[in-house]
Image 1 (cartoon, helix red, strand yellow):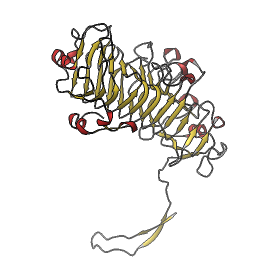
Image 2 (cartoon, helix red, strand yellow; image 1 turned 60 degrees about the vertical axis):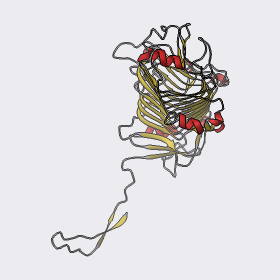
Image 3 (spheres, helix red, strand yellow; image 1 turned 120 degrees about the vertical axis):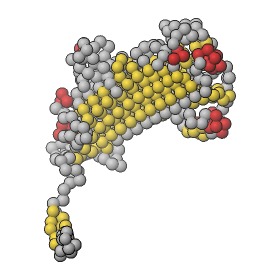
Length: 454
């Protein structure tokens, strides 16, 4: 209870009454919201309060209602704290969904680091309006809509560190296109109706992915990504498309993984990659969303010096305000060669040669020669190319078609008209501190490339 002093004022005379004191109950900060607590040395027969926490996160997960917050205290959570996963957030297991405006949150206690080991991270299936925040998952992953699940949506994965994932021996569904953070649609054979949608993956640190124990720089780069987004191969019918919907991946830092992302069989969705820092990967990935947004990312130390392969499902791509460092090929187009907007980027590198070698734009041989295809319908402009070779290959067709320098691309295709070229091979003359990941433009590059890049 708390004391409250009240003074009444006469609305006519303006005179104040003598003060009087009453008592009112003290309400919790969030009426109707429960804060559950879990600690490595807790007790699952306890009440789950701050003074008497649970031991297993799953105990709190099963009790949580819309708007509730589950706090994991700092320390190590091992196989004695869960069964396969540290938290199995699955509607089929009796876990409740949150609601719009009342998301259920599983997170670290502020200022503390709960580290999960010996368990395979977090699974999120048949559920909606959940937020996972501030966990350190060592050796596991986060799986969304995996294995016999459907219609998982409005999920936030925020500010976690997920690392040292190896996955090792396991079921086929987990071994198929594994990702450190994976968004899946498990297919009509499982009775799935819709894939996951409205998935927001932000501010995470993802690193050191060694599939089956194979080092990241030797593993299969096509299927093993930091973020894998999968849809079904064969929808049952128009009522059960089994396709992944909107996925946004923003402001993450990714390194020491085979590829940044693998986006497979997503014919109707939009995938947004924005504000990420990506380095020490074999390749950017292979992508097939209907609509791709790739903006304000920093990409460097890509071992293959090649970027992403855009699969035939990609109908539009918007690639703007990125900084690509030490790369010769940014995108290889397997599908439609129109509907792309690539503007205001900074490219450092571009030393590929020959019609079948790397190039800034590379057309798969199954597409027609770029001069005969509708490639000029794209918007490629205002890019800044920093290269030691003024005659770098800007556009090529691996089927032996046209190989164009930037000047030829401007003259023949009418693209890159307002783009600029700076002849330079020394990164330290271009970026503030490239050895430590600071790619702020300096010197002549800052002037020449002003307003462009990440």
